[in-house]
Image (cartoon, rainbow, N blue to C red; front, side, top):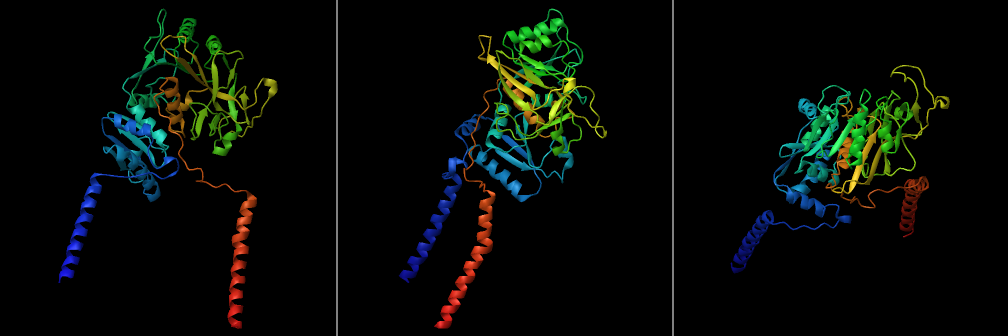
Length: 448
C-alpha cells in the first residue's frame, strides 16, 4: 500500500509540474535561432522599428485557399507578432470575394495590404526588407511635399483620366506624402519647402521663364523628377543641358517584348535592371509604353547611374509605329538616324548639393510617365518601381536595408555531366549492385 500510495503521489506531482510548466510557457518564452545567418529571426533593426510603432498594425492577405501559400504568409507574420502582439493577420479569398479584391487593387495571389493608423501600403513581395520599409513609410512623422508642375498639359497627380497619375497620387497620400499642383507664372518661384519637383510630360512648350525657374531650382539644390515622354521635350534643351543629358529623338521599340506576349513594339518590358540604389533586389517585371531613350553628355558634374536599360533588340524608331494587330513590320534603319540598343530609358543623377543645409541633390529622369498613369499602374511591378523612385529622389534614407539571410546551400546547381552521372548511378549502377548482392547471398545459402 505504501508503494502504491507513493506511485499515486508521484503521478499527481508529475502532472502538477507539467501543468505549471505549460502555464509558465504561455507567459514566458525562450527560443534560440540555430539557422544559418539567423534567417529564422528578425533583424535587430526590425525589432527596433516594431518597438517604435505606437499603434496596432493589421495585415490583410488576398491569398487563395492554397495551404502552402497561406502557411508561408502566416509563418512570416508570426515572427513579427512575437515582437509586436498587436499586429494581426486576416486572409481574404479573392475567388470568394472578388469585389473586395478589385476595390483593393489586388493583381497577384498573396498580395498584402498593411494598415497602420490612417494609412495603408500594398506589398507584392514578401521579404523582411520590403515589409519593414512599408512600415517605415507608414510611420512617417513628417509630411513630404511633392509639387507637380501644371499649366502646360502635364499629367495631373489627382486626375482620373487614363494618362493622369491620380491612382499613384492616392498611393502617395496614403503614405504621408502630400501632392500639389504648381502653376508658375511670371515672377513666381518654386517654394523652399518643396521636397520634390515633378515635371510630368508637358504637352506644349514651356515658357522660357518657367524653364529658367526650374534651372534656378536645380541650382539651389532641389530634388527633381522628370518624365520626358517622346514629343514632350520641346523647348527643354536648356534643362537637359543643366542635367548633362540628352533626350534622343524617336520612340524606343523593343523586339524582346514578344517573350512577354506583348504585340506592340513600342511597349518596353524590363525584367533585369542595372545595379543601383533604386533597383537593388528588385525582381518584378515593369512595363513602359511609348518611351524615349536618354543619353549622357560627357564631362557631366553629376554622378549618373542607369536605372532602366532595354535589350539588344531595341532601337529608337524615327517615324510612325504600326498599331497592335497591324501586319506591317518595322526594322532598324541607320540612314534615318536611328540608334540601336541597348538603350537607357531611366537615369538617376546625384551630386553634392549646392544648398548648405543638404548633403546631396538627387534627380531621376524617365523616358515616359505612362508607366505610372492610371491606365498602366497595375501592370507588373510599375507601382512598386515608382514607389522606389519617389523614396530615393525625396532622400527618404530612413528606409531599412536588411541583408539577404538565405542559406548558401538552399539551392544546388549541377552541370549536365553531374546530372548524367547521378542518373546513371541511380538507374543502372545501384540496381546492378543490389542484384549482384542478392545473387551472392543466394549462392552462399545454396552452398551452405
